[in-house]
Amino acid sequence: MKIVVAGCGKVGGEVAQQLSEEGHSVTVVDLRESQVEEACSQSDVMGITGNCATLPVMRDAQVDKADLVIATTASDEQNLLACLLARKIGAGHTIARVRDPGYVAQMDFLSEELGLSMYVNPEYSAASEIFRLLRFPSAQKIDVFAEGRVEIVDMTLQPHSPLAGVSLRDLPGAVDAHILISAVLRDGAVTIPKGDFTLREGDRVSFTGEPNEITRAFRKLGLLRRKVDSVLLVGGGRISFYLCRMLTGLGTRCTIVEKDEARCRQLCELLPSAEIICGDGTDHELLNEVGLQNMDGVAALTGSDEENIILGMYAASLERAKKVVVKVNSGNLVRLGEKAGLESVVSPKHITANAILRYVRGMSNSQGSNMEALHRICSEKAEALEFRASGQVPGVLGIPLKSLPLRKDVLLACIVRDGKTIIPGGSDTLRTGDHILIVTTAQGLNDLTDILS
Image 1 (spheres, helix red, strand yellow):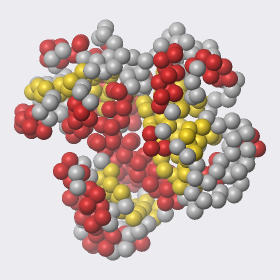
Image 2 (image 1 turned 90 degrees about the horizontal axis):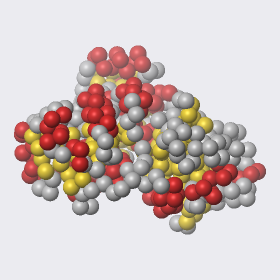
Image 3 (image 1 turned 45 degrees about the vertical axis):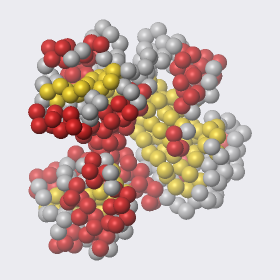
Image 4 (image 1 turned 180 degrees about the vertical axis):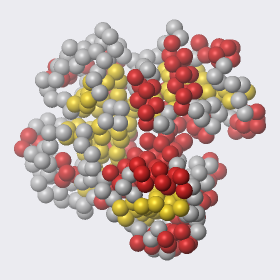
């Protein structure tokens, strides 16, 4: 497809690179010539320097011939105007990044009036992921599929884990629950495991199943941590705002440390149920004074990746066991944080790029199936894809799974049929209407038929 990406910041650059790697014809537009040059040097994309909210620039980018326009500049207004112009001159689909809570509250109306195909809010999406992690502290990462009926939960097997030394064929007896291990990260490489695969200490494991079945398995194994009743958020940006609203809605005590005095006053008005502390979140003495040692959860959400990693490492070093979540956007620093022992590292940039990539792949689907979800798991080295069999898919539907010529790098992890979740066996078949969860180490699977060898 022909795709125009307006805005070459963190999100736009990531989206352009991923779409280019998947074979799409990508043009990037940005006011900053240096950003355009960087995007063009890193990926096989065309570049145009200019204001994406003006007709001459959009015509130069051939937006009128574009299948999709994605506006990810730092300005919500510019993104919305760029999408409006794109639709008026003939673009097929438009996606806008919208971050301001005031706009987000009326996005259903704006989407209809402006003809938006989709809008993305990196901060709200990141807050939602952190919220899930704080509600299930044992997990390092949680991805949700089939409208919440299925989850993939990542966890690293600690020393003396009851699962160390267990082969996957013996897993049902060990956990007494209907779950599946769909991927394992070991020594930097991801494996789609078979029944003879044996787990080891240090493995990062992706558990797949219904939420209550995963909880049951973790409880059986003694892996559930106690509930998070109090949370410290360091940094008072949009992620903290959204996350605090979610947490206080459940009765969780929230404390936010923010060094900008004007922002603190604003947060006091917006979040009357939270405690707002004006101070430097990198000051360990201040953190100790506000009760860091006694918090059940800590989220490092400042604007600096490096500060967040250091804060996360300090919080994780304290004796009292707590859930620590760190926000990092740089891909290299995400890996550094994980190597430093930080359990849960969240990247708003990656979350947003994955959401856009999912939409693009959905546009590329055949008439027989639609992609409804895409998540990167196992430190971004594998993909979990949810397809819906909306019609006939020759060579896939109605055939026992043991007879399907599946690719070696693909696992059919779960089927949701008529609201019921099935961990499939060799005799099961796929049917029209099924939601099908696929885990793979391959990239670029756009259609259900792509799972065949």
